[in-house]
Image (cartoon, rainbow, N blue to C red; front, top):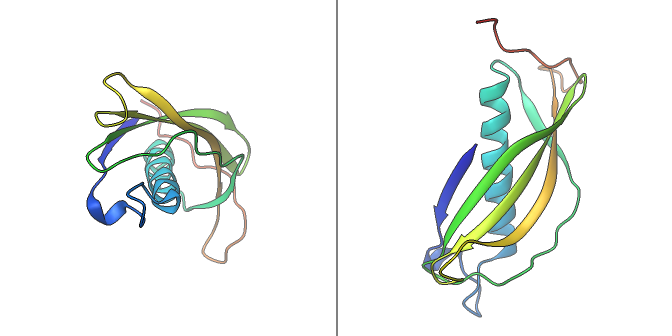
Amino acid sequence: MENHKLVLPGDLNQNGYLYGGNLLKWIDEYAWIAATLEYPGSSFVTVALDKVTFKKGVNEGSILKFSIEKSHEGNTSVQYLVNVYCQNNCNVDLELIFSTHITFVNIDKNGEKMPLRNLPAK
């Protein structure tokens, strides 16, 4: 799954660079959407990101590309590899600026882990 985001003035810190927390929020949101679309009816919560290392500052007007691919499926959890690329103000070509694995757990209405719901058979 891919998503794109335009970096706007309200996304920037006092030095004119993207707040890292905004990037993490978008990663969480877009990966959650991927998981929810892949496992309809599931109720996911984020439990982990394997690392948080920002490789390059991002300026206003940059276009971010989020590439999200499932990397592991367990009984109650699913993990996605998220690569974030920047183009426009960062560089003419796409440049990898962030990469992480994010893990979600499927929970019931009481917050207890429950097995993943599989897609309906086609």
